[in-house]
Image 1 (cartoon, rainbow, N blue to C red):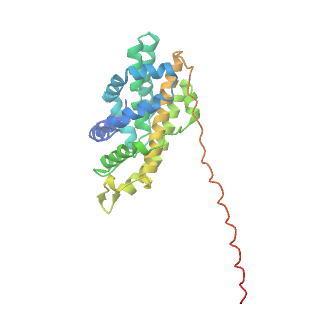
Image 2 (cartoon, rainbow, N blue to C red):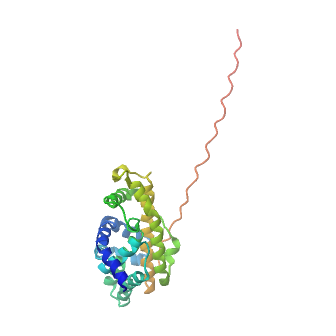
Length: 270
């Protein structure tokens, strides 16, 4: 590691603490995991369901050195090859456990990898320097939690579910870049006239809801894609895959044209 890189990591320590604390709350992370499982083959989905609690706990114990690497890169706005290599090595740990037939331990490690795509799909974490003023992230996450029942979960990228192992790292990079493009909307809409906007004043008509909806679906898709790539790499059962249903907006029927009222019949004078 170069001296410059070490310096960047050192400077990122305080910054990473703030960002890590501001990452998806556990309640949202749990719902992301559940929605992502709906895209998995039944066998893997059931295994993850059985270990749901351990998976979330493991995800929250994300290795500090990886947190620091990601924090430095997210602050700079670009994922470095060194960081991608470290993340890939971490993912390989789950693959190794599964190949050793340590199924329960391997499934927990695999499930906990949701933290990587979830963070890369988070417009708060990908906002870059200088980040948001104090309070904006808190209000945004509170708004997302409040809006979860109204957010339609859609498949963000169907092709991602068929990724090969060598396509995972480039996919993570694209995921980061797309999320970063949505970050300014949060600042514009949630920090006005020098004050943080209370999330309770926003609803589904706000541009923030649009960003939250896109980010949530993007996170669900990328989590499932990450799990599937690694599961297939160990020969995991990929049968009984659910087929996402494509739904298109239905055009309303044309309004019926009312027939003109008949002209009144003239009355003769007696």
